[in-house]
Image (cartoon, rainbow, N blue to C red; front, side, top):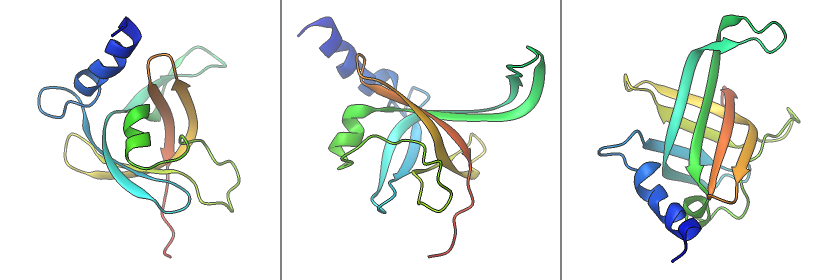
Length: 131
C-alpha cells in the first residue's frame, strides 16, 4: 500500500474517531432527500478575520470535514456543493455542539481534496422549511 492509500485509510482514525478523537455524528442530507449519518469533524467558531480590513471581528464560521469514501459508501452519488439558488433544495448538514445542542446548516461552499480523500464544507445557518 502506498502512502496516499495509507493516509486515506488513516482518516478512519484521524477524522472519524468519535471515541478518542474530535469526530461527532454528522447528518448529511442531499437535495433529493437522501439522509445519512456519518462521522465527521466540525468547527463552529465565533471569531473571524474580516478579509477587507484584516481586523478580528465577532461572527460565525462553521464548517465540517468529511471523508469522501464514507460519503460514497453511504450512497451519495455526488459530493456536497453549495446551492446558490434560494428556490432549490440545498445540501443540509446537522450536528450537535459540545453542549449537545442541535445545529442545522446548509452547505455554502465545498473544498474537496481528492489527493487525501477529504471534503471541507463551509456552512451557513439554515432554517428547514416544512415539507
